[in-house]
Length: 147
Image (cartoon, rainbow, N blue to C red; front, side, top):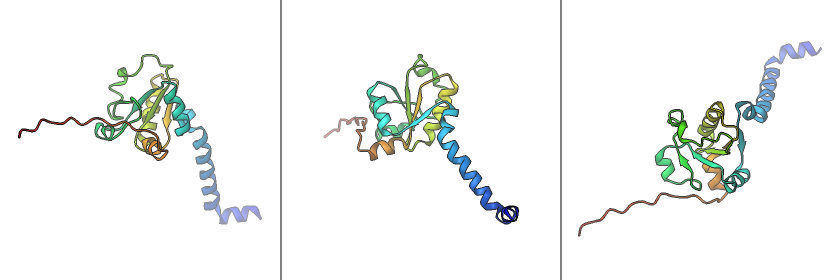
């Protein structure tokens, strides 16, 4: 009886299996990649504990607002500029981008390069702003105007 039901409804069983795997991966995937995803509460703790802040957005995005004294290295430049990161690979590093997707790639790259305490801000700076947390901005230089 079950085998008949399974044969008729195999797409549903396949979908349930895939969803189960995705749920399991969402809980352990980051750990397998060598980094942890954190929400804004944990990010505040890392910020207050002087974690190295790495903003992997473009320079233009960075100039629109950043967290604390974050260092800006675009995710596309990170591999070639990995030497600009802390030499102490035990120092906590919090990585963020706009939404958390580019920073998860960057966090995985840092873990592969031997950094042991890498944290990805889930939701990126968007989540940070939505939590009404402070954002720094670059001061725009004023050009002298001739009268």
